[in-house]
Length: 418
View 1 (tube, rainbow, N blue to C red):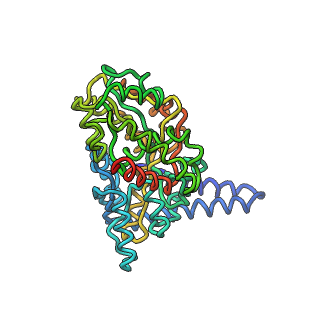
View 2 (tube, helix red, strand yellow):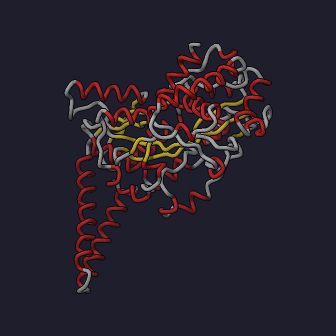
View 3 (tube, rainbow, N blue to C red):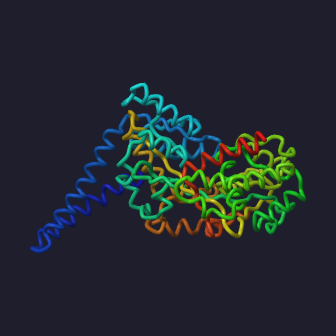
C-alpha cells in the first residue's frame, strides 16, 4: 500500500500521543485538544474518502502520446488504485477538448453525472475551466500525500499565473531542454538563442518545432518570443494588449526570419511532439526543444535514438512548469479521483516515475520531506540527460493563460498563415 494507509496510521498515532500527553499534563490543554480534533478530523475525512471510493471507476482524461507513460499509468498506478477498490481508466484526450466536454455538460444541466473524473490539465485550460467554475476545489491539500508538497512555492501556488486555490493537485515537474545529436552538433551551438539561430541558418532543415497549440510547440514559440522581445520581464502578470501589440511584431519578424531554414523550408510544421521525435529518430533533424529530458534517455535505451543524443539548455535558462490533475465539479467518482491523485503524489510513485528506466520524470513533491531522499539522489543520470539541477538553472517562468492564448493565436496568424 502507498502513503494513503501509512498516513492514516501516522494521524492515528499522533492522536494517541496527544491523548496520552493530555492525560499527564495540566497545562496547554486547549491546543492539545485542538490538535487532537484536527488529527481525528483528517483521519475520519480520509477514511470516508476511501470508503466512498470503493467500487468507483475513475475516467482519467489525459495526453497519451508516450507508451512508457501509458504503461506507468495502466500498470503501476492502476494496480495501486485497485488496492483501494478503484478502477482506473485512461482516456486519451486533448486538455482543451476535455474542458469543452465538461463545459458542455454544465451548460446542459449535468451537475452530478459527468463523463470526466480526473484531468491532466495544463495552465491555459485550467484557467479557462476555473473561470467557468468547472473544477472541484478544496480537496488538494486534504490528500495525505499533500504534506510533501511545498504549498508556499510560487511554482506550486500558481499555474501559468492562475492561482491554484486548492482546485488541482501537482503530480509532476517539467523542464524544457534542447535535445541534440552530439555527433552532428555541439552544445555550444545552443548556448543561447542567437547561437542556435546561427546554427539553424548554417544547417538548413535540421531544426523544427511542432505547430501551436501543441504543448511543446507552444512552449518553444514562447521561449523564442521571450528572446525576441528582450526578455520575459515585460510579459509577466496580467495580459496587456498594448504591450502585446508593441512587442509581438518583433517576435513574428524573428520567427519568420528563421522559417526558411527550418525542416522542409518551414512550408509545414509537425502537428505534435511525437512527430518531431520521429524526425529526430530518423535523422531528418538534428535538434529540437521539448519538455521531459528523461524521455530521450528512454528512447536511447530502446534503440530509437542514437547513443550520441545529449541535452542542454540556454545559459539564460529554459521554461519550466508543474503538471497538475484536476477533478471536474460533476464527477460521479470524485472520491476515487482523489485516491488516484494521492497515489500520483505519493513518495513511492514520485520515486518510481523519477527512475530513468521507468520515466525519468521529476518530482512535484519535496523528496527531502520523505524517507526516500537517499534513494532518489542515488538514481542514475543517463549520459543523454542533463542533471536536473543544471536544467533548472536560470529557469524561465510560464506566462499567464491570456498571454499564452494571444501568442498562440498570433503565431498562427503571423507565422503559419503568413
